[in-house]
Amino acid sequence: MTFSNFNKNEKSILGFFKKKFTLILCVAIVALILIIFGIKYYFWFNDALRDIYLKNFDKERYNAFLDLNKSLFTIGGGVLASIGLMLAYIRSKASQKSADAATKASEVASLTQLSESFSRALEQLASDKIEIRLGGIYTLDHIAEISEKYQPTVLEILCSFIREHCKKSEVRSEQESQNIVNPKTDIQSIITIIGEKKYYLDKNINLKNTNLIDYSFFNLKFQKANFSGSLLDYAQFPYTNLKEAIFTTAHLQGAHFIEAHLQGAHFESAHLEEADLEKAHLEGAYLGRARLEGAHFEEAHLEEADLEYGLLQEAHLRGAHLERARLGGAHIEGARLEMACLEGAQLQKVHFERANLESANLKGANLKGAHFKGANLESANLEGANLERANLEDVYGITEIQLSKVYTLYEADLDPEMEKNLKSKHPHLFEKPKK
Image (cartoon, rainbow, N blue to C red; front, side, top):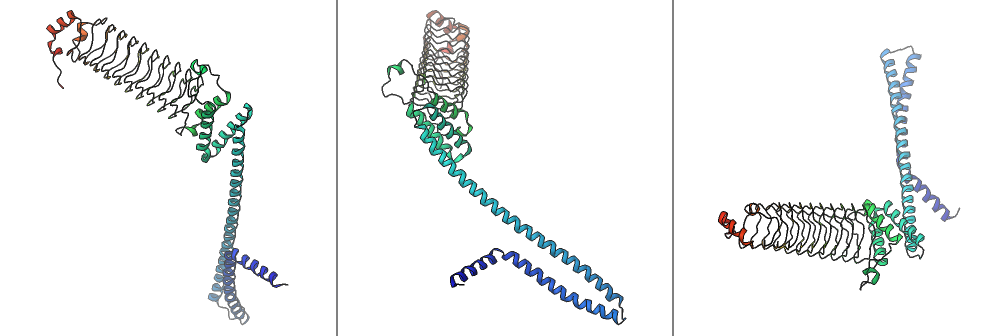
């Protein structure tokens, strides 16, 4: 045997002792206990035989001998049970180590497989064939479903794919101007995937400056999504969750938002001409300077919404909820506001010319400097409303009884006959209001 072979054998023996140290120690302790009790038992047994042989029988000594036997059997049984438990524990630890190693190996294999699938899916996205691209899209989504780590990356890739393939032109093309865009199957699939899966909710959905004319977001979840500057004319958003979504400067002409959830959404300077927002939830939404001409807001919830300087000419707001909304400087000429609730709304310098406010609730509203020429205020509730410097000439359906309940008519423009009667009966309404 060579020296190197001897060295290897020595190392393997040492390795064995290191691995089995606990077991060897247990066996040594048990062996030592058995040897000690064996010697003790041997001497007791010899003494007992000698006494029997010499007929010198001692009953107490004999009973002690029996007790010793019982103790030895009990101790022996306990020792054997302990050895069994120790061996079971050692086997359990070994099994656990094997299971952990197998799990780790499985995880490594799974990660490798995921990485390979991810790379293949990216290659598929670049294909010219729609069916291959769709395969890549669904593979990426499957990876996101089984691995939380990949979710932000997959979402960004899918959004980037939309931004790249549905890029808004710097100058709006003739087709875009005429809203002639055929939705693409792969883009619609991505929209549906992102909007249906919970693991994309509240993540960074960036679809800025995209051309998504006529695409469907029906009943999907795009909470906090960013659509700013995008073309979304005639897009379908019924029942969609768009809370706190951003549509700043976006084009949404003729888009459908029936019963959509748009609480806290941003529509500053957006184009929503002829859009349908019937029964939509826009509580606390921001629509400042938005183009809303001819838009439908029937029974919509706009409580505490910001519509300052918005353009709502000919808009349909019948039964809409605008309590405490801010519409200062807005243009609402010719709008339909029958039975609308504007209680406590901020309506300074709003243009209501030719608007229909029949049975509208304007209780406590601030209408300072508002323009009502040619408007219909029949049966409107004006109790406690501030009509300081408001223009109420040529208003239809208004009565002295309605105006007698307002907070102030200081410097308001009224028809001469009505002004004369009110001043004689309610002179305090024409006094400068106390701040």
